Image 1 (cartoon, rainbow, N blue to C red):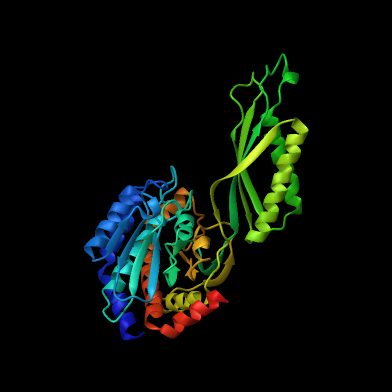
Image 2: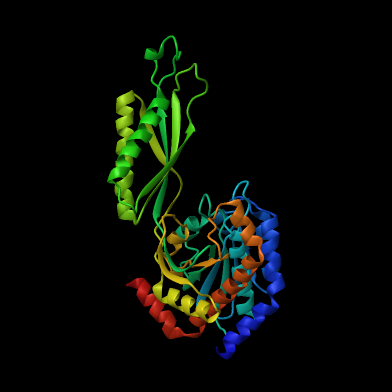
Length: 385
């Protein structure tokens, strides 16, 4: 361990209570996507006090922000903060730890005089729903950034996460109302169309490879049993390993809807009701630096690569700038995220210990990039290739 690494680690040790306060405060005030005003006020207020320049309502998103500590033009390293919670479950995905780790790493880096370059904390709301990173990436927030990184709490230590591309699709079937008992033949049952649509999708699954999946719910299915439903709505998440494969699956789902409409006499239309997520493109050079740093910090049982069956809005950022989204375990037991048990593990002693490791690893990895121009060139070349 060199002198600068020791300084970073010691600085974070001295910041521990501030980091814990941020994590605990956000955990105790759970807010769903695009309503994270407490978390944003907390983070931007402390970062402003630490000398960061704050931009609120980034890209007209009320709970997105940028905090920048300018200490030279290049390189520009972005640490991403998530802070949205899940309805009823609170921070059962541990986004409060993500926010606290990026906050702590940024503050620690700003205190190291030998490090030149701009340190950014980008606040990215609504990861669980509207995926603000998609809009931020599309509107150029990361165009002048050299690398972007964050960590995510999990039950496993994973260096490279490869996620699925995803389209969120809403299918609306429209029929004709009638008296459901005395004159059903006069109506066109939109709910029947949706049920047939799901049956068609279930038949389609046999022909999809393991790397593609479809999950759906019926959000509207009629008003009363005595009236033939004239409108029924289904919402789907359709995922595949990459955009090309996803487009093919979506076309087949559309065919399932067309067949259901033809059978029942209904007609349908569909739209994307949430932003589309792209598959994660991991910067393997940057990921290798992260792996070296967590190993130095004493992390064991490291899995190098995982092909997730889920989707990340970080995938969209990884298409415009070299990026990593590694996982760190917050408990020795297998605990599934999006559960009450995971929310409690986030607040536990083990969760706090992982938070400090994540903070140190983020800061050390960012410092490696900011201090080694050859490393940065290699990361950019790999990304371009």
